Image (spheres, rainbow, N blue to C red):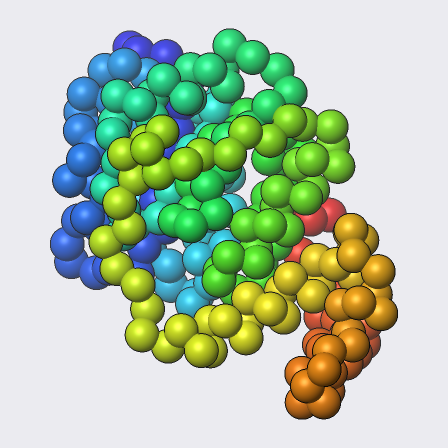
Length: 216
């Protein structure tokens, strides 16, 4: 029986077929090396909940969460995962496409992914901020580090852009980094109105929702 030291988690909405990412990952070969692959079907319309469920079900000391529509080097991925296994106080992250490699104890202690954020990049920044606040050192993953290729991009980019800006506004409210007046005030009055709406939405509604399955 091989001891499991690593877990690769892939949330997906694809039904009845393998996510493209698995074309580059040999599940049997990885299992022989002590790394499990967990594919979680997103039945909630919230990839962050699917990610959290995968984390809760995992057995590895090192967690790697990746998107289902990317291609990457398995050899290079394992190298980064082993770096995290053998080191303390660091994590690797790519924001686009989403890849994070972190110790399981650290991501659970941080509370997992915030399920109030729909996955449109701002949720990555929010998790990254929490891990940094815990004292972990961030190491960015560039595309060449893992031979990353993003296979698909959504058509509704304008909607995703607005959601991303909303999530980043929530991040600035929660974690600082930019003074609030600089976050809110813009030259375009419509943009100012949007940001005030996002601010009020966070204060009076969103902040009170349950953050994740790991939240007490």
